[in-house]
Length: 129
Image (cartoon, rainbow, N blue to C red; front, side, top):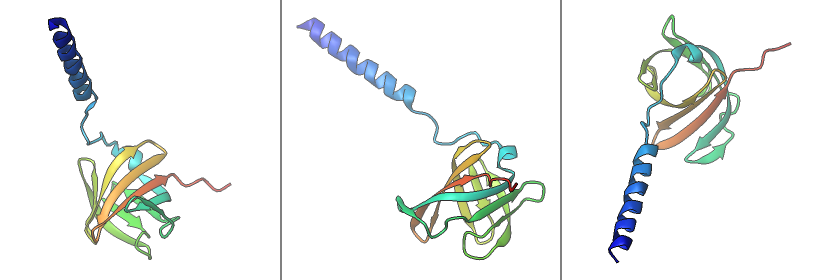
């Protein structure tokens, strides 16, 4: 009987250790050099549902001049921006994009506007031949 309790406790302890080991920081290590340049929005979600209203929106990040350009809100506009850890802060109109995942060729962002959550998948535009 005692060995069953001991085995049960060991199993619980093992499960807790696995859960704690699998937990990691929500923040990713951002490589600004791989964000620099032009991006095209290829997929977007609004409150977790796929949306097509912003398909093809463009983003351009210039870290040298701390300027970003996007047509996400309709017309193309440039704005100063800065980074706060894994967040891109577009100073005008005051939008914060949280970087969820990043590679040299893809960038996944989330943001909230007017109490609505958005998710964006950006890819490098294909070079014209």
